[in-house]
Image (cartoon, rainbow, N blue to C red):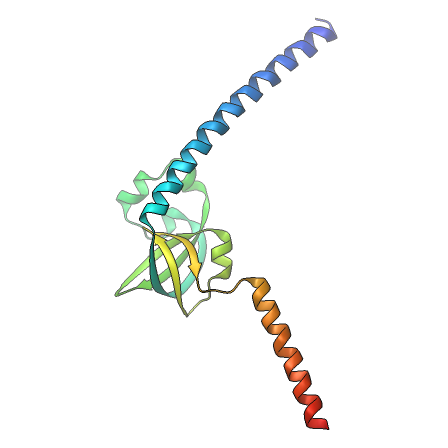
Length: 151
């Protein structure tokens, strides 16, 4: 085989891979939109008391065996963000995304939107930029008070 044939085979394989990835992307985006619609229909606002935050595999999170059996294999291998919280009279383990996990305070009451055991968003929490602006304003106010005391 000469170099031309080898390049032709490589180009053909790359073309087939591109077509396969295109259709996989189309299929997964359609499935994701469908799941997002289900989450939007089922979410409820609730006040929870956050007890603990942890990161680990789903089999270590004390979920019922019947629920763990329904989860796809690749998801069982992933590490997820778990929040142990008191929702009403029950103590439950909830799942959330990384940005929500990082913003969630521990040992505090928080208003969240829940869709089953999935936390979709935090309600009434300030963003990092707002928290920085508040901290900066407090420091400036303290400096102004100190100057006023010196005079």
